[in-house]
Length: 53
Image 1 (cartoon, rainbow, N blue to C red):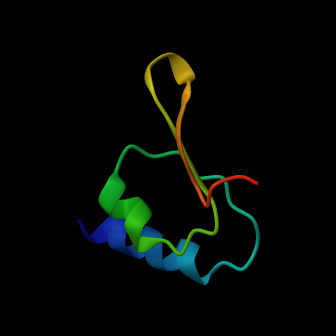
Image 2 (cartoon, rainbow, N blue to C red):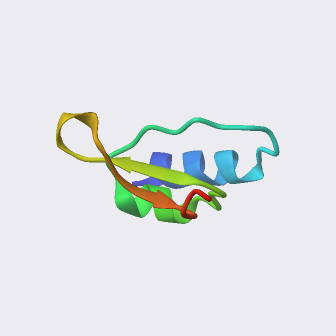
């Protein structure tokens, strides 16, 4: 979808902090994210990248 591509390009060009909430794994993979949290059922933390120290 062209609008998703345009959004990912605009967010990728932004140099500030972002909080992105999405269920679209392809969209998230297009962003150069420094940190990613994934939640599971009930809002539990399922995955975290990079692993917190």
